[in-house]
Length: 181
Image 1 (tube, rainbow, N blue to C red):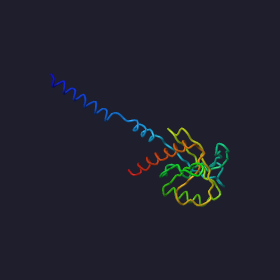
Image 2 (cartoon, helix red, strand yellow):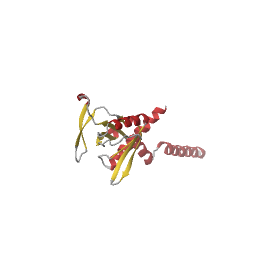
Image 3 (cartoon, one colour):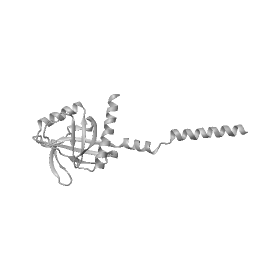
Image 4 (cartoon, rainbow, N blue to C red):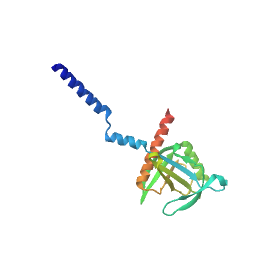
């Protein structure tokens, strides 16, 4: 009888240890999974010039001092072609820098070279299931952008910018992972 009790205790101890090691997630693991669920979306539109009336819309950019801009309905760039995004510190604030793949970098270069004096209008969405979103910026095109990187000062808080960048990087990682298969 003593032998059976010892075996039972040994098996019970091993089962509990295995359940603790394999079945339970740490708080850090839960937090990492939660941050991987955050998604982001980015749409870069070009200010419309002499385009057909049905293919444009007028939007309001900036919350504190709204500016009306007429843009083409279809974005020229999206998060589908994004390689990476980051928040960068600038003098007196922060900016978001997004880097696109080769094809989108070529598109950005073509649009920026052929539309000086117009605006690139940027729409962003972030958070769980893209709950938050708005027009973030309308930087003026002053030169040809050949680097494939677009930096802009967004009309959002630092926390919102961090959420957007996290979501964009998660989406970019998923897209890059699926394209490697």
